[in-house]
Picture 1 (cartoon, rainbow, N blue to C red):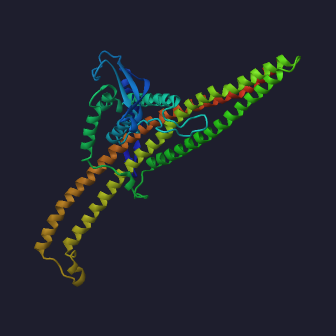
Picture 2: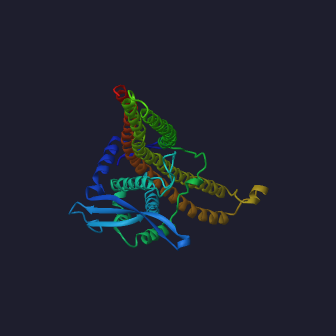
Picture 3: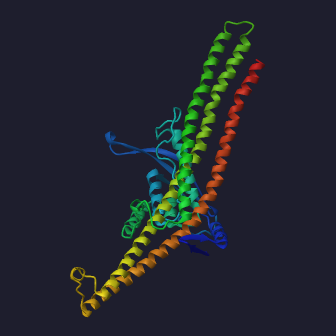
Length: 416
């Protein structure tokens, strides 16, 4: 992959872009295996008075490529809890910090309104979350890097021991140097322009989707009440028709049409909720993009700190050479002996060698992280553009269809 750093910013070349696209097309687990979540089930554990209820989801897998040898079994089924999906995602985020890891569906109901229950065991919510978890797995399975991970395959097909193997990996990772994005100061000395633009975009994307979903929930609430008011009209006209001879049939038909209009909103808002779930995926995706950028900032901070330490060591060496390092030299102008300066220089030279290697290592890590992150962010952007465009188009079509319903009702009423 070709590219270069310019003014502290990594620039992707045209050849690099083409290579990225080819790599993304190189491997997808979905070309070799079918993955689906076919059902959910409510379970409980613990004593009767201390029972904990939870939901499990049945994952079905089937190898479709006879030459594919990475699967544990050809056909498999196993149950997973939502918390295990969280474990898988946390593992992937730690193992591949430069990747915008696909997001999980909401654990608790967000943007609720009257008709949408906040009960996490409600059948409608559980089924929507089942669909979201399936999308999560399919996103990983279609990713050129994540789909090759052995722990992901274990999650799909390893009935026993997967959690333990993941915990063992987590323990070994605890010994590595971890990035702590929360410790990054507000202002780095050298900020990458391209990543800064992505950081701003991720924040604005999150805010815009959040505002859209919040306003959509308020509108759904008002639409629901407005359409349901027509049922009251329907009841009035039906009761009225009982006392009229000439108008009876017309009033009764009018009541039926208004009842039908009131019932339309239920199916309409159910379809809207599915579209809202698609947009929530990218709301959470914006947060995942922000997390990648914060991890890169942590690497940038490590590089700057290592460089500052090295520059301080260079200055310290220069002072030793001049014999002006000690307190006595600063107070009384005393100068260290040649032997003393030699010892101090030798000790400091050893530290400088270590520091120089550290600077080189963190710089290479930062460069590698930046290249991989930019490639994956481009993949994220392409998928996001396609999905949001489709979701918003479907949302508009739904609104057009709903707007036509009263007109259709009026046509029926004119012939009643």
